[in-house]
Image 1 (cartoon, rainbow, N blue to C red):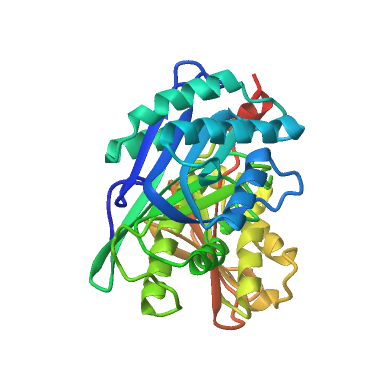
Image 2 (cartoon, rainbow, N blue to C red):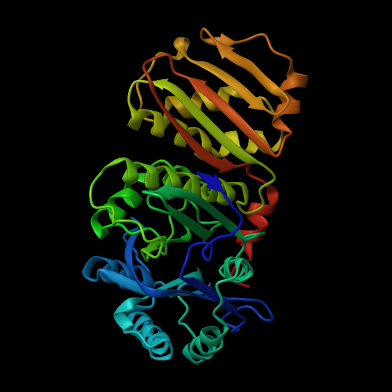
Length: 407
């Protein structure tokens, strides 16, 4: 496997376009279109929030009932959430508009929206945006990068990843992009994400691979503990790599799962590190837990702790907050058996052992906590299971951004 430059246009047969449609923002890209030159097997995972945006309901129905999809229309600025029957009608209108210009059926069009909840989409602008997008479709790396730029809201930068790998002598590519900066606490999965691959694979295995992998990637991210109404992760597989279709869980399936994990983890970490107002990526690794599920619970509990996140921002080695977060995770363990470490490019130091503080240098700890990526390593001394979770520090700017988001 090799990581390469690019995103959603890296795989064969995929095109992208972006446009400034004025949905909410002025003079910036705010709509994107992804298109497969041939029908692609589709799969998706969606928010667990009971309040589901209209695009989530539309996409979930389409990926469940239809084998193939060929296009995805995305707008930024307005979420089309809590918009009633009219919001669903606007999904239909969006799909029909795109389908007519692309020469496909509306059932082959998936839609996604992100932004302010409770506002209706300005459909005239959406339609005008689609009319700009279709003739601008390209398969260039730049077109994919521009699409990643167009789906941003409060994100400070676009997020892309791509890999290539081999299946039965055929070179396969998998690429993706995502957006997410605030209202990030996935329980599948708090953001918008789009993956494209030229792999030939059955719908059943594509769906299973995606659902399993989000458990250890996007579902292990939290910025602020809020699970969005619009969380959507979609994948299209168009088979243009020419490999014999993967229809069973053999070594080719495992190879694809490994590639999927690399792309999803890369995007998830980019999203966590770009949390609203963040100055640092905050990672927690739990090792030697008794079960995989407990490892996940422990890791997520630490990166979700507001007090710990504030300590990371202040470069303060306040390990008591970490131990406290482990303690209320719901996992039963012996606190005196646990070891805590701070890790970074400046090294690794033991900070807690045998139920008390270890002998460590506060200066060295502060140096590690001042890095742009900080890792807390938790050794539970209970078993052989592990998990990693990603978040960010909690800063003054997070409050500023969210205090006036609608304006």
